[in-house]
Length: 160
Image 1: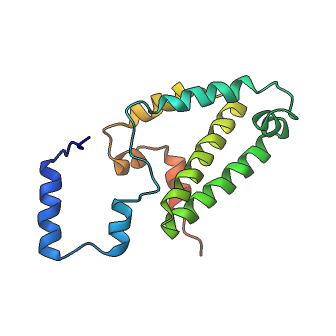
Image 2: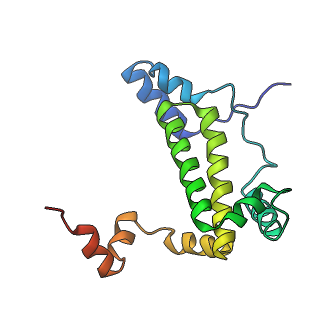
């Protein structure tokens, strides 16, 4: 079966720039086509996060001996936050080292542990989606400038 090739104006511009500058670096080329990463599928989407949140929520009162989520939740907020932090650091390490396949796995770990943290805090994904929607279309610089004055004062305090 022949694969359908989709061209866009952006890809043509990118090619033109690449020709003017020469070939992309080996590192850049490897980021563009990593054979270990499957192509996106139309049947996979962000709803998997809602299903995962539901699973973690359903394990909140389960036996910690039978469920990793229940075990984490039974250990309390500090342990959950520690585990989330560890996973975030591992994610950053993989990003910096350019290990795309490992970055995918660590990113999934970060998202899972973030959802455990939300369940522990009594948050629902819809609350986070609403906050993201509120920020949508707002410059990150403008959003940060609009934060509480107390935060600005603390953030701008210089240590002697």
